[in-house]
Image (cartoon, rainbow, N blue to C red; front, side, top):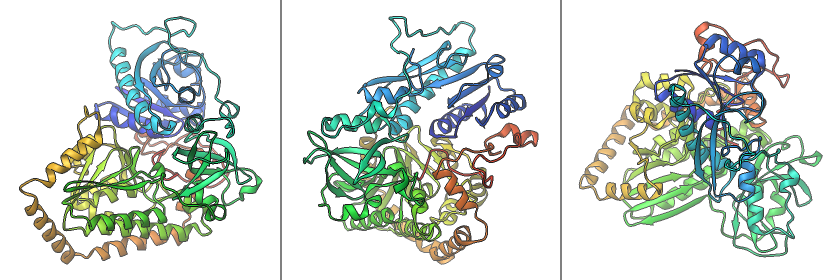
Length: 586
């Protein structure tokens, strides 16, 4: 089928659907929902069999849904209506939820239902559920809906919330007052639920140290103290007391006149924003994005960074942890990353907040290069990158530094840099990528700027093993495979072969030469006359709406040799393409 994805941004769900539909042979093109004229032109150019809207912030134009099938992907159960479906589900402590695919019409979320897929909810954030359970259910529901649309036997039926047999109901927008925290009265469980229901966007409005902020990235803390007081710090996080316990706050965004122009609107580590205040706090355990486990001959290095972003400090901390792992007598070291993201490369938010973003970009890329180099130079054991969540930009090439790359179902890779203001990239990609796929394929992947699913990644050579789709515990599966690798009779031969290849590669071209050449290009990105990277980073961090759909996504425009309807950039600034969808760095 010819499928047009119409979406407000090319976020994680839109990318996942693009990958899954393309993998099944559908011809998929993307248009960003900029205005009615642009949408109408896209439909005219592409003439899709069906339009699918995975993420919109406004209704579809009536002339569009009246002339062709248009499917809305709603992150709620049958009958649920309103823009805050998942927010309410988490705020109310639901354990079962779902995704509904319905036909667009005049009423919001009121059209005939083509498919509905249930999913379980964990004790976790809205953004985590959106990337995992909601995305999985959405893929299943969309595929079911497309199958049914091609069948003459199926007739979609409306799900009226007034019907007692319909589980959902119409709900208003979830506002700040609906989840305002009362630190003296709310339990730790209630506070966690409120913050998690708003994680990603919009965050919980609150005050810390007398400054107005929005709270994100909340986790349980095994501490107690006077309700509302800040008790301790651990890494990037601050612990704040509730009436019966405490919660860790990992990230905040300052708001209001006291924030300062350099930080207003930036989501940053809490301990960084309140550096002076947190310096006098006691240090406690509990918020540990980096941790190590060992099971016989296998070590597991976990690093679940918020949104996968790796600042200079985080890269240095992870490199130090990696060095300690090498002191252990293991045969296989597994780099597990986090459950939502493996890594998305350098931390654009911390860079944007720096006194000199160019200098911080330079420090950050060198820190992640140092880490990548340590992995490449490890020759006394096998290293595995086990991807349970997505990877983007430098995070992909950091993973490729390992001997093997394993990936779970549903993982999406973005192995490119160019969307970020034509950034050249480093992390030794000019060495790591061609040695896996060859020079020609490496150039194609870096130039096409599209997301890639694990099936394609396996075919082209970026992934060595696809993890079992039916596994209930991905970490247990990874552990069993790693133990088999460590006990393989061919293990010593692989180690000898690995050492020989590294020595040979070094003679042909030293690692330092690759790094020097990459960083020379990156230096021009950071310090040169062309400001594209800095403008693109700013637009991405501050979520400046795009004024056009990039042609690598809008294939219908590229095919006709036509750009979009001319529009003035919404921020009044240069019209420069920016960002990796939802897949990185903030």
